[in-house]
Image (cartoon, rainbow, N blue to C red):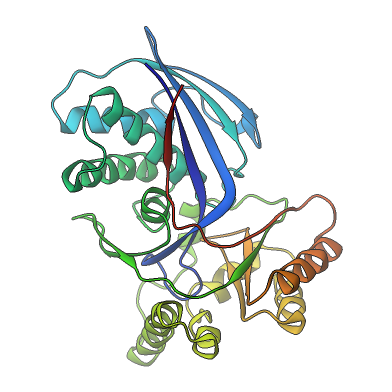
Length: 308
């Protein structure tokens, strides 16, 4: 059995939705070609290929697939996988989630399970979480949009309770990754473990406004929703020239500018492709030719399977 899984890039948090909201992106993904084999083997090409661990015990693909087989009381199927990467490692675009989703989804396919049923989907998400936890920490805000597509809301991590949020906003995203690595686990250490009531309610107002604005849509409200008073001020220190980049983007017409996940990738939200491209040019001028950029709209499709 040979099949290909395409796992899309995702933006976790999406500004104020810390650990809750996630958005799937068009046209930027990692692809995984799976084949049954005598033992686990991985070959990696493309972005940051030399940084991907080839040991099954450390690789999110294998960790997730093993978790799926174990959860179903099945003997693990050995396989080889050819990984073609576009997503930066430790870059803030959900590379570890993409790998976890691919591994868990592949295991369900190898097991002959119907991947369209609610029960199997939940099992896939739980197994993908095992891969994500081992690499980047226990959170679902990249996994859920990577697997389901569109805008997703994580209600409960332990129960893997996730909702697809209605999405009607016509927006463009400018995504830019400076040449720095930010480990998610490290970036979480700089965040406050508790907040005064006033700050907590402020963050809630931004987050709920963000989900509402994207569903209505309401572009004026979206500006407010994209503001992140919690994580961005602490994590911006990891990204050189972050505030200069944000100022440029907002002056160019962006509705908002923030970190994608824990960074270093940043994203700007605009109402037109023209504005998004102008912001892309500005970020290239600011950060130089080493940055990776991508201009796109959100994708309503998550991970895709094709048989070869």
